Amino acid sequence: MTIEQPLRDTSLRRAAVSRLMFLAQQNSLTTDHITTVAETFGVHPRSVRRWMDNAAQHNDRYTPQRPASFTLTQVMRDAVALFCGNIAAAYRDLHKRGHLGDDPVSYATFHRAVTTAYTPGFLAGLRGGEKERRKFDVHFTRGVGHRNQAWEGDHVEASVWVNVNGHRRKPWITWFIDCASDAVCGLSVSAQTPSRENILLAVRSAVLRGGNHGPFGGSPGLVRIDRGKDFLSDTVETAFGVLGVRVVDLPPRHPELKGTVEALNNAVKTMHFPGLPGYVHAPRTSRRTKTDPDERLLTYEAFIRLLLEWVHEWNYEHRIRTRDHRTPYELWHNDLTPIYDPDPEDLHFTLETHPTPLTINSDGVHWGKKRRYLAPYMQGLRGTKVVLRYMPRQERSVELYDAKEGTYLGPAVLQNEATPQERREVRRAADREAGRLRTALDRANRQREERFEADTVATTPRPTSDITQEQAAEILNGHRQDAHACEARPDLIPLPDPTDTWNNTQSPAESRPGSTDPLLPPLPDPTASWNPTPLPTPSEEPTDEPHD
Image (tube, rainbow, N blue to C red; front, side):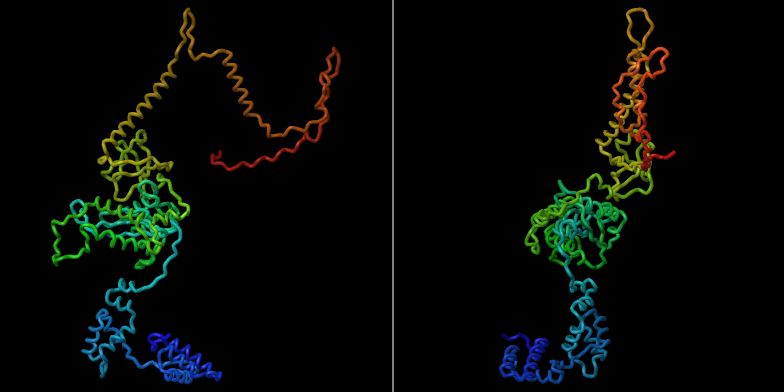
């Protein structure tokens, strides 16, 4: 076997020469040993002997002498940085200013010196900045883990122009992906720069499962996000904190730390957006920069519909090469890790809270100067203090809570945007409240009026509420027994132990005139159980009742 490029494998030469020097010291070195090494390295046997002579001069260690090479000075390094990594421009400038020495080196030598002194990543950074330099970095990859062990969230701007109410805009997508299965758990779309509203909607969509949400979701163990101010808002932190989800705030300009969602961003840019009308990076046939007035763009609704179809295809049909060509659905379905599903009614933590309690007035809850919110359950609650929670930038509907008890009352809608059905529900709620009041008043009037029994002869009027003497005695007897039962404390003092005298079958003595004999037999002698030690008074357990 002949090793390729024999002039560069210094470490292998050192190992071979070390073996030959050991044989020479043991007087076992033969010509066959030298010939075998020479054939292996593809050189003449005399070259192997020169290697051994070099080792003999350096304490039996092969140490080749490298030829003198050209090295860059600080002036040359500054020139390369000044011209943003353009080696040819830096060489021309140095040659023009005479900084290459009396005997200027050739451009090939200067180029070789620059590429030796600087790594490809450093030269890329000189040309394109830190973003280009990071493309040459290496990093470790995380373990796969189990489903819902870790999520990653991010924003991505669509590379497509969309018609949003007659304006050309590029929507933004906010989504969360499960790192173990690469499944998109939830997303939200916005026609403008995303905010905490988009994050809260995406969190709600990702946590809920079933129905339109699919089988992916639940409560994750942790979520990795970047340092965006919307992701770091108090509302988003509270939303994750309620579920006990740890938020990992990653350092900036390190996309490899959330590589799963970055791979998803790159996939949607290369697999989905190029096939849509209005693709931003589509090749042009001319250099005109004006917008084509006849260009047909997708509507905002159509863009969202196509995006959801692509996400469904990603979750159920896209096969991942690095995961044995399995789909995210197969990876999720084959994972038996338990999933915690929060109650949908308990997901109000995705809303922001108004700092001060508000009051239910005759025209609803006032929030600001022009916003009035009404709901059917407000009938009869005028003057009640409530806590208002809302979704940022969505003012049509809010959620109300009782400020005193903290109980959830329900949603309320803006008066100006209430539908006819919602208005009818408010009126019907008022009618139901009035009907319940009439029923209560009629019952009270009937109880208040005194009614008499009908008679056939002239007699004193008798109220229909009169009861018989037997009924009254029975009621009183029952009350007395109940009172005695309430006063009885059979467990306060235990009964004494029975004695032999308890089984006295002797009949009581008959009383005779002038006799002093007792009518009943004498009482037995007291026993030790007649004077029991009192039981310790049980300590009162703390209660929530106020003390006097």
